[in-house]
Length: 193
Image (cartoon, rainbow, N blue to C red):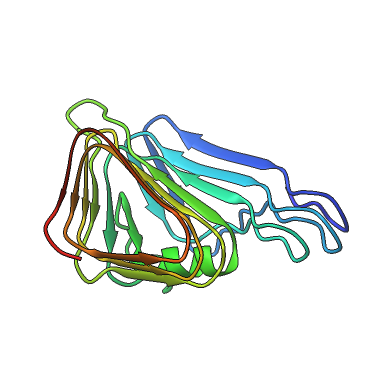
């Protein structure tokens, strides 16, 4: 869904009712045009399980980066990368902090959402030591159907950051030159950072 010479990238939606695997080396692109235009939109969602082996490209050489949406039931943000080494085992419903940093820094904005299904509550857990940093104006949005636990670190030069969940627990560190939005249906608690 690349634009070619000019114009904005298109929309790509890859959605599975149960499980979705994006293989190592897969190329999912919705790039803006070489001379003008913004990046497009990519969704890679498995409504129960999502296994990531590569990151999409919604960049725009002469415009604003596009957006990537991932939408499993629960998700865990872990230390390192889940896409860096082809041939490594896939781990369902995880994304690496390095993957997030790389995508936000060079490609576009990222929206991570969860949704309850069956016995899965729709939690989003950001592990301690999973530190993310980027220098672009791209934004990060975390939306959990149930609990959102942020235990890592975000360091953004100018990008906006938003958290939305039924409950939000902040024990990590959040620094950005952009805007921060916290929205909860019940509680927001902070113990450090």
